[in-house]
Each structure stands twice: as C-alpha cells, then as structure tokens.
Length: 94
Image (cartoon, rainbow, N blue to C red):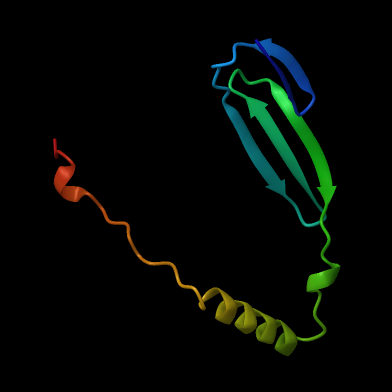
C-alpha cells in the first residue's frame, strides 16, 4: 500500500493504482479559481487566487498596440509546425 497525500486528501491505495484527476480554472476579471476533482467526483482542491493585472496596464492605445505587436513578434520567433490533418478517408459515411 502507498499513502496518497495529494491536495489534502489522504488515503491508502495499492501501489499500482492509477488515479484520475481533473483540473480546471475559472477565470474572472478580479480573481481566478483553481479546482481539482478526483475520478469519483470528489473535490481534491479548490482555491481562489487574485489576478495581478498591474503589470499589464497601459496608458494609451498606442502603448497597448506596441505591446501586442512585441508579443506577436516574440511568439512568431519559434513558429509551430503544422502537423495535423483530417482523416476523412478513414471515416465511414453511413
């Protein structure tokens, strides 16, 4: 047996047990809520966090546009290679 102490939930379970854990974030303008539930629907963790928006405030539309362009340039430095496709030939049409 292994002692599982994850996010405040403690229980004994066999060593080869696979545990399903689902997480989610509920985003709002002033705060965010992080929650995790187990495979049986039991709450494992829930906490509200304040959003720190001070670092992204701008004084003008021009400054906002400049920051967005700088961010787009930064993410385009390492573009993601397009590797997915639709497998339409494998879908049987009824």
